[in-house]
Length: 264
Length: 343
Image (cartoon, rainbow over all chains, first blue to last red; front, side, top):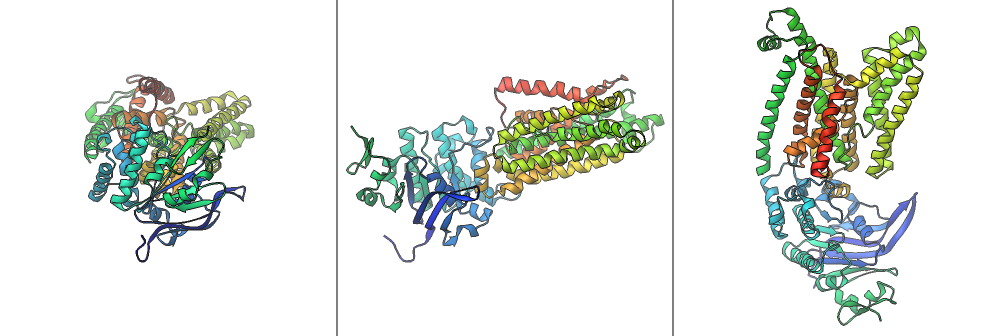
């Protein structure tokens, strides 16, 4: 699979994540090591509170790591200035925008923030990127709506369009499938798959849809109490990593179907 | 973009209305002066009666310019606070800046009585009023700034602002209990707010303060747009969050501090004008909203002043009463009609 000289878009070695509480570190997870390459779709799964969001926040530079190292394009993450970082990593967060008055067109256009002048005026190239992002996410019919008028599924697509307009090699998404019904979850994950294939962007997304993520992800990160695992879905299944996700008295993972079933 | 073009007409209309209101404001007052005489005194020509020239140049013109500064400055200050604190009810008053200014003035006017005699004469001048007010709002600003970095919750911050307001009125009440009737009256008149009786020197200082504040606000308009998405998104797009927050708070305090010092606490303009503007200028883009709020603020303030003047009468109403009479129903109307205040 690997050709010569692999370019790592994102790499972490012996990363330990958590919070500083009154100067003393509160560890959430550690021994996190992985390498992500161009065009990969990578799902992050784990139980609630295991540190998925903390991991994404740390990787995006919003939160300080406790120890270890993060490399973005082979350069240490902390060497990037805020504005440089904004051209490398874009985010899709669970939070809705503060403003209720924002139109979809304006929301997506704000993704061009790192490239526009001090007034934020969009150049023809910026407009082109915005259009491209809107087309890829099939949100053309939403552009004149206000953000608060959208359904959850529509809003997720618009949020992804904004991240695409930011035009970064790496996109981090925090639970993009929350609040969506089964159809929209599948639609959204297929969209992510399509984006990684067509745009060669690397997408890391955290999710609770383990069965869907298994089917679509190129690689997966599994966060459990015992440790961090990073591999292809099939090998992770073979190594019984998903059994370790949850206590086994209620649900068990069926290695045949790749699904969780309720224990009788 | 299509929308950028269509806002040009809004600006032209607003500018036209502003000029009309400006002329209307100059031409109405206790003394009736013909329109052509007003123009000739503005353009430096001679007038039929020299008193007319004096009234226009030394009284009405400074008052009209003060109204424009106060309206545009407070409107933009309100807009900045609403975006920064993610709260449609935010404004310079809610943050406690104006309360701080009031407290400064209260200490000066009411507290000066305690020193008695000669010292009182020295202390209560036009200038010391300005400094007391600016100092008061600056102190509150420092306190709020310190809390901004300690309390992340913007709702808590707004409540803290309200508490500052309550503390101020309590302190003023205590001060007024110990002061004499004359001093109390002086303070009450200041707290009514007034656009008139400004010297040209005062107007130019006010103008400089407002222009600096507006300039800082407009410089931040791109970051303000990003802040509409929330702190995390803004940071991920390259906004230097602390620096931007600091600039916005400084801009607001310069605007609110200078204006309150000269015109007294003017209510509701900071809160109502941004919401009124959003009714016509349906965008969240601050590069368009800031100039629009600025123009509409100036227009509304000129109209309020014209009404307060009660044309062809000797009486003048307190400007604060008029802005409240206009502003409060506007906010209620927006809440009832739209069910929520959007920002």
